[in-house]
Length: 477
Image 1 (cartoon, one colour):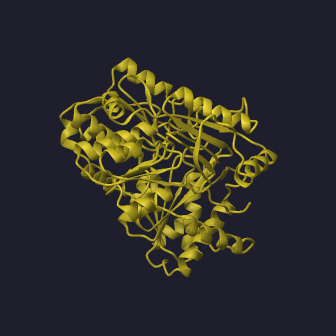
Image 2: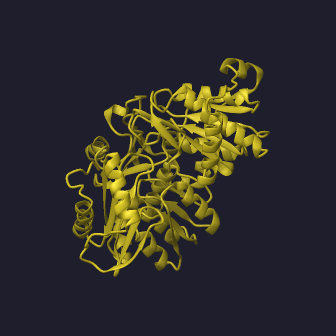
Image 3: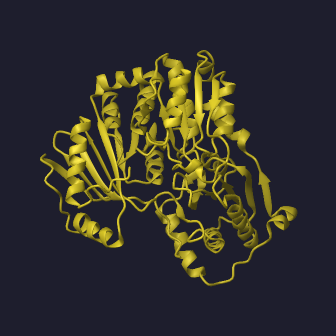
């Protein structure tokens, strides 16, 4: 199986593409790339999550790095991806990796590669790894047994959890949180966020409960992605126990989902809008926002209200990180639940975002629902629907040809302002609203996103796209 990166790293089915041989091949390719760039002297860092074979895969990768003569640090505990990204930055390393498939189903695992500063590797970097992997295929890869590497110092076991927790604590107003005595319930979704989040919130004198905290490589039989369907248990706990907020993180804790004080699921678009508005109005920050093309334009409206700008980039958090670095933006995020804020790591961090939301509630003395109502009263209504469709190879080719080559579109019943094909197809309507059709870079799905002024109109537009592509009855979202 050829090593090929998507928008969120390299992911494959365990025992099929995710094998010891492929993990060694990918790592050897990265080691060769580091040497070619003169970046091998500073060393490398590896961390892993809770998925099946994650720790073993991290050790296999470390053995390859040691075999290549590259000093390798291993975070020898189940670690959130944001912690691993922070550690690459903290130790001033040129590269690092996390063994994770993030929010994918349990039968997947994968590897995310990070570059200097703890950022997601961009297409240029991952293309270089793919090229080196192709060149190395079929060759013998030198390794050093893990225990021997630890004994000789070629592999060093580290635990940067305290440094990461301290960095989050320094970035938020802990005194404001302590003053409120909020009741919070956490749902790590059988993933890796519990230690960091619980420690920070208890330090801030919150009353903290935790559900779904044990390790379960099958994630309780659920998709480890926080959405309205997977967070029913968290929703019930919030309502039954009168909690101020319910916080869920995905499998590797780089994304979050929120249940508000009324027991309602707060879409990631709303979380992004709340935090951007809070940073601008209540904390007095200045700067742009960055979102991908499938994320709410409410961010644009908030930016305009405060004399700022919102930048649109393709899907993939590496694009958001790069644009934030270029523009000095305040916040960047995506509708799937990942976001980051200026001054923290240059990548998604569900733990930091969750604590910042708690700070927002404490500082404003308002609930999430009250704050969001304040935003919509000033900026208008924005309602989004999201759909996902599985497809056969033949259907993929048909859809790609229809939408991306022939550039055919359905009759939406609205005047089209323009269409963009920078990442899939995005249609912008005159007078507001848009619809996106693109193939997922992390799952075998065609995704359709539509945002209009009402949910009914958004559903209608999405259905027209669905019908045009002969996908009726196939939505799995």
